[in-house]
Length: 469
Image 1 (cartoon, rainbow, N blue to C red):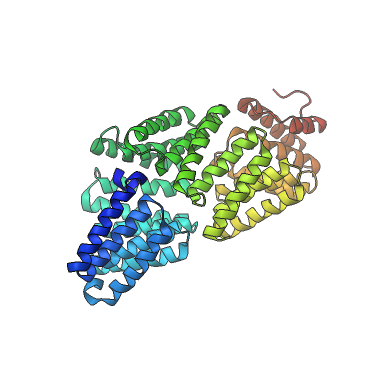
Image 2 (spheres, helix red, strand yellow):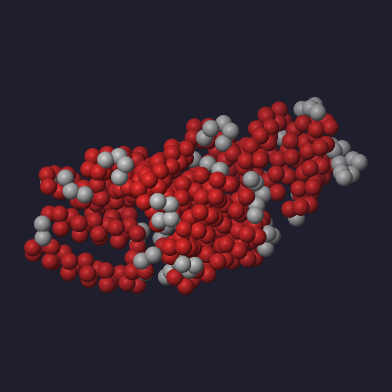
């Protein structure tokens, strides 16, 4: 990791170098020299200060000028400009423009070096990022697998670029909820990085963070905590304060402590992550949105539902302005909003947001995608008394996704409570309702998160008599 590129305090040095370079280029440089300087400036703005709009203002005219010049168009500067502009489109949330530009870059690299050259793998990485932004995760994984195959054939296994490919592929597999496979790739990434960089490198810290995330989702909290704390320690000694990567490590530590029931530690780490978001000026980025949504879930657990609702509503508004209304992650935010509105007694608004989430997922996800679990559960919970037949159908769909969704114990308990109530209300199999009710009670005890209202309802329906084993 280049500290110069990430330390805002060194911005004056960069500006001075940039001005001196511009004077020299204007005095004796060629068109390619001038455009190369614009590319360097744009990459600095993109990677160090997250000023993506300013980076775009440099890159777009630079690419047009390069494409208009025969010599520049035939040089590698042209696809490098396309790569950078495609990444900026991704950061600005324009998935379609990003995908089109990255495919254009891929075609140019292929034209120059052939389809099997390692440089093509970088273009495939960028295409994968575009597809991921558009919620097309399976296609993104296929692009990363193609990039990995190119790198393995070209340079062998224990190399920097192969570790990069493993890491990228694991990230997409996590979006597809293929967590064991993702964890396997991340362990291999960590092995390569520790061999190449040593035990205290920023690159290894990122991989340990991602592996901790996968293990956290799989429920392996002790190992996840150990890896995340090691990542945090490496970042403290190798990165500048409030580096963007620290946001994710702090948020993941918060999630693990939440799962372990240490809510004070969880909030402390969330607040550290939010400080990074504030200083990096990136509240509308997808990663920042996820952090803030998860903090809202903690606030709900702490009884601060109104504060949580205000936070998630702001996040949704900013994110939709950046990526449009068709991004699949907005469904997750709508689901959280629905749950909070239900807590606050606004059942009509809650139902509207839950149905909105499901409608968006209907257009972006496969019917058996485990990411549908929470929205199906939220609507089933809302309808179980008023529309028990629809609630039962929704709960059955959620139950089919339960094993792959890896929810915490509390949502799993809530699903079985809803299923039990809906079965009784529709005149369904009472023995199955009793089984679900008892399973819910067991999950509640294990989670340490009782629900007096649901317990009372199950008891009133006679599902807890005699007492569950």
